[in-house]
Image 1: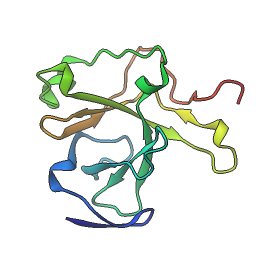
Image 2: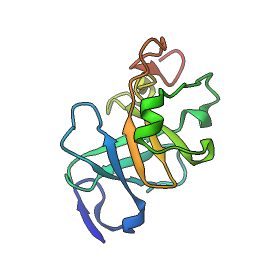
Image 3: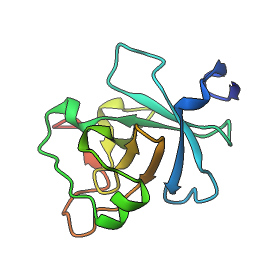
Length: 143
């Protein structure tokens, strides 16, 4: 499948790489289909590209690669909605905000991670109520 994106131009994606967001991204309830792109293998950042809106792509990162103390407990309704049967099928990513004029001011949304079930291509954004996590956690110390 060819996808014409604003940020990456025309790209080819396999349909089995498209995630169906059964738990929508906050503020983007009408967009359900996204693909994870890794255009620069040299960085930890990936992009969550909307299949339905070529202008929308979120920079995302796996917090586990940063050695932060970050553990999440998914509510049962999320496990059910994403049809998670094994922990090995779960990929957790977090949306980042990268200021164009100050990349060292990058923040990570730890409060509302993106949960992907790689076995069935179901995904969703989950707000971790009562977790104490921040929506704008600084990626770099002393920024």
